[in-house]
Image 1 (cartoon, rainbow, N blue to C red):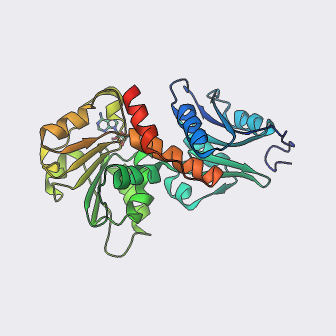
Image 2 (image 1 turned 135 degrees about the horizontal axis):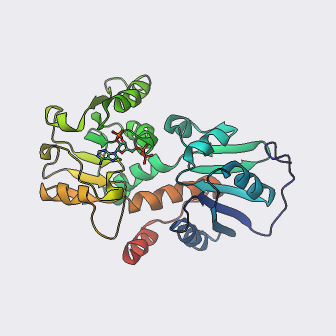
Length: 289
Ligand code: ATR
């Protein structure tokens, strides 16, 4: 009996997972998890489910009643998933949002694998060390807050959050400074004042929504230098406006496709206890973009 739904789950032959979103048709998660399952010999099915905008909780409840074992959550339901969870992992609590759910006899565990996905993509796939480096995080919405804890855990020497609306950056910084490692205080800045914030940076991460509209972020060119990695959490078939601008300043650039694959791999590990190989999946996704 599930403590949340009050329903006894049915017992399907294979373990079932799904991604919930609205819209969700574009989601690459089913293809990624299908590849992981084949690679690791795990007997799972993973589907996409369109949840009504006012019916996320009911959609999750129905999936649990059908025997669903876990779910990924995408736009616009990550905050609702956070509220729905009966237990939160520390990284989900820090993110204030949930992208991975596990269903067990005691209820719903809410987790967040986005930040680990980013850090793994940077450290392993891009081969860029975060420890001891100067990091600039652009944006102070859910995407930025979601990666703060894993970024801090990776021990940069400096972490600056810059946002168009300064109060939102200040709110995130004050929250994380309470638990920050000694010596690293997160500092904040407006986008246009970044030239006085110890630029250039080693790693510049775009966590704003600007790339959704291919808008050029109003950041001073001096944040980038030849040794900078400019990372856009978004991805598209062509480099984003942020990546094009950074490249024009001599920076190396990377989009968020690897983060997508790595957050999925972490969710797969949470559910199944085995780590898939992400390199081939990432290469195939890249080729198909
Ligand atoms: P998400 O959950 O994707 O982070 P969000 O919470 O709406 O979405 O946050 C969007 C972020 O992108 C914010 O930091 C926003 O800046 P403001 O707080 O000033 O609104 C930022 N953003 C969106 N479009 C932008 C643009 N054209 N230039 C600069 N920042 C932008």
